[in-house]
Length: 110
Length: 115
Picture 1 (cartoon, chains in turn purple, green):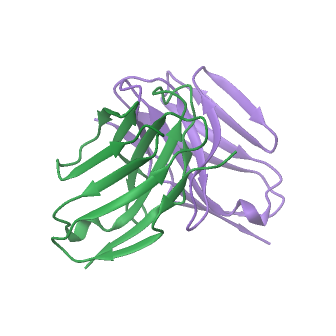
Picture 2 (cartoon, rainbow over the protein chains, first blue to last red; picture 1 turned 120 degrees about the vertical axis):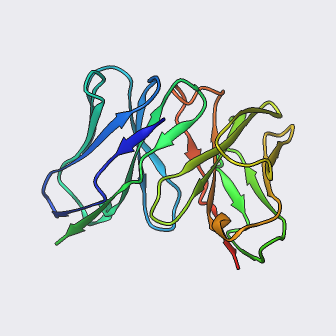
Picture 3 (tube, chains in turn cyan, blue; picture 1 turned 135 degrees about the vertical axis):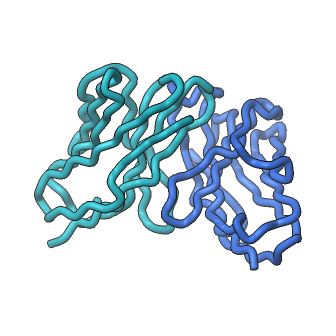
């Protein structure tokens, strides 16, 4: 089966750095995605990792370790608008479907 | 560039009824995937359509069916609605079938409530 785990909720302060972890156990691996979803809105693509290491994109970075089945999303210089749900998703052997975790609800406080 | 649009935004149906949800893919995208997102959960894959044919299916019963049209727009049909079908239904388009090299672009979803 497919198992993707991430913390349910996190709280961080404006201007700080937060790391959202994701662990996965899937039958095959073709890449890991992070999406951001504001309440009542569509998920929007943040990052994609298929090789081990860190991918940096502005204030957001994503890390992958395939041997450990582990990824994290790092958000720097947090802004109030970063309050949202962050979804970790793995593309396994199917090649066409993403398996999503339940999402991590991040609250950024002043 | 036009994004993914879904209609209607909200819908209330009675148990046992049938519903059709619609999706227009992003300009230039030929693949449409449908996901079901229950409250507090991540999206669950229903199926994917590529060039008007079903390209893959998740763990959903046959009463969930779909279509893709020549302009790449798509419909999701659900028959014999059950209370547990209440969820946000997300449509996502992408270029070609491979989710690994083509990020999904989601619409804002249709919120379906079954009473």
